[in-house]
Image (cartoon, rainbow, N blue to C red; front, top):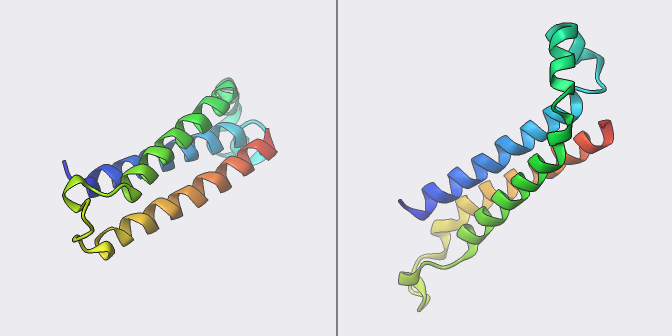
Length: 112
């Protein structure tokens, strides 16, 4: 499996967990959750609010792995002969994902 696939998969996992954390935190206090899901759906999601810290920790862990894969030079590039621009897109994806996860986490913690 290539490093590009690993970083994209890890960043996607962190983004998914961040969105899950925001959804768990937001479902407890926002009236639109009741409008969209109904009372029983909102109550069912409110029961998952205890998972918010774990989801945020999981997203942070996956982001740490994504940053490590994005910035750690492969063994074949240890002497510096590889093209440094080849990982630029991966680094942009990881940073964008990190900003989105932090933003969603802040919103989720403010709501809950």
